[in-house]
Length: 418
Image 1 (cartoon, rainbow, N blue to C red):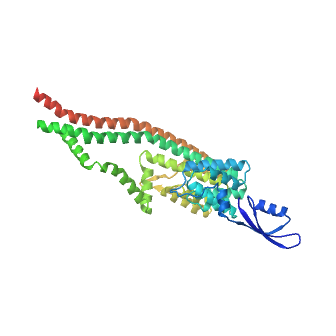
Image 2: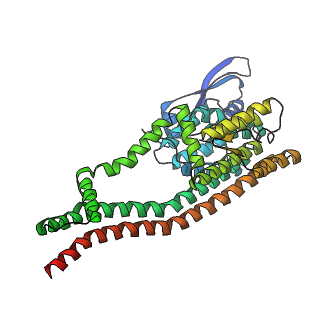
Image 3: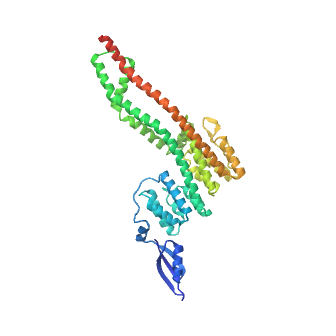
């Protein structure tokens, strides 16, 4: 419980200076008035012991990284429930902070509680913790405080994060099977090339037989694997590092993001996923009362794709000039080498247009996001259904090549011996 230092006047007009312990400033003033004093000045007096006691006896710990989306989503849902139950915000945050394990979120909540005790608002305190709460989160909390509906905003924010997390889980879950199959198959093939094929090579050398072309190719591959096996795990890591390095530069990031949108099959999934996420973000911000220009800026920053950042930037500039949100979307940005197709489909443009006319833009954006969520799920399932037989065919060809290459010389040796 924080300690407040106050200056007050007693019934005789004498000045009194003292301290009082209270949960918040309102309770402190009430306690002082009950003592028969009239408060002239009051401020929180930070004390390490009081803070340690309020924090449940646990201080901050050293952590790396940010806050996982799943953890932040659960925290937001719990905070919305506590606010809906009528608990003061400081007490709600203290309860949730005590439940957290040592993490970035726990450290952030300790600092936020201290800032609120010092007189800061919740949004101001969260804005000082950018590694835990992004601009989207902070601005929605700020809109909830201004509108006096913080519990509603928190519930809406929790639903937004849960739906985004659900879509991400579907895509990741669908890709687990093919990735595991490719990894295990690669390991088995490397083992065959490193251990099994050399045994056959020694047999062929003992008989001094003439080897067919397929066997010679297999031997060459086996010798390369034996001498350069360490390069096999380095190749995907090098590609990953190269992509990370390229995305550090503006031109490289733009080029890679364009490539990811134009890639066969996967490009459609990436594009529809970004459209679903950005429209849901924009709809959530607008429904929460965030001004349209600020909402577009936040959506642009959270799109994580240079093409869509450029598109939302152009929409922002056009709206500042007095146009509607749907008009600049039409033909604002074209894909390179595919100039006849817009960044967003006609469905998005038309539904946004209808939403502006009816005054239900947020509802229409939610419908667009739901529609694209469903399309992403269908495309992901179709991709997995396509990859399963394709992987079986490729693995069958590889195993068949190894078997034929090893047994052709053996058949020839058996015929000579007979």
